[in-house]
Length: 58
Image (cartoon, rainbow, N blue to C red; front, top):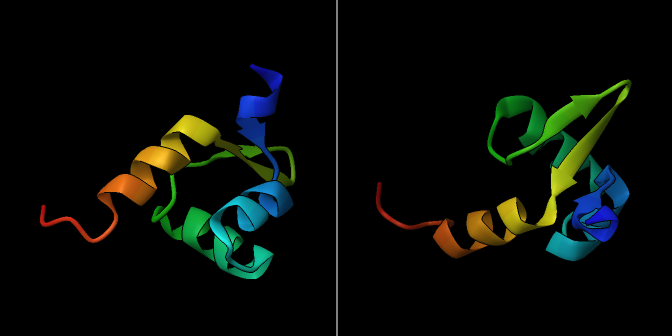
């Protein structure tokens, strides 16, 4: 399960985005994330679901 929780940098690499964009999306609630101290943590299955649903009509 440890490899399922990603840092901002790991999430950025996984999503092929910049760390700045990932932090911005996390702050705005666009990406599913949790604040952990001064950083953000991302649960990989949630990011996969976000990718799958990205752009889908709501």
